Length: 225
Image (cartoon, rainbow, N blue to C red; front, side):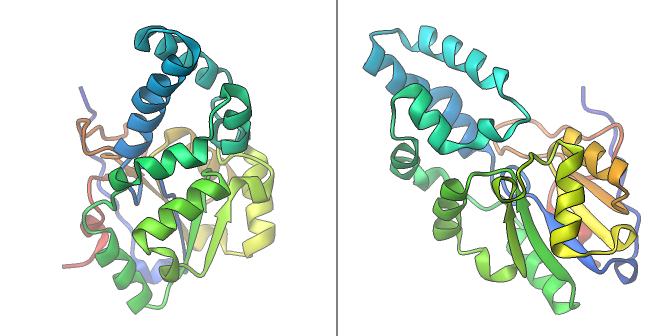
């Protein structure tokens, strides 16, 4: 059962910089879930003489072994590990890449009130290229940062130190929106002032609010009415 919603309570006048995650936050995570949990295991099974179920079980164990590290999102790493061209496979199902409702409205709103907006993602640069080409969201951002550029995943404390060195934002006057609680906890520890949890990362899964952070289902909840 999802915790009851803690509603965001902040003033836009107290925010200068906005950091936005990509997968699950701006984009429907159904694409990623389907790709890694269904599509890749099916191809891997066919290539290795396994049943779909056997392949899925093996790959989920491999994924879990590198969770919360840069390797988890590194397409070159997985291409080498699995003997598959992962970027090419992503392009074959890129019709499933979708922007969440109200995201574009929100991006237009925050630009209209002159906020600095950065995309901050664990996604590999090749994944980012595919998704920005498909969604055309790139022009809304002042800066786009992949965790591979930083050298750490967002779940790791070192990420936030190096991100701050790169972007030079005022921590207390910065808002981060993300669908991963571990990322929000790491950002909180570093001193990011406004934290927002995205409670509906995938259109195919139920809404699940955070017990620890203010949350939204859609970004229109952050646009003043």
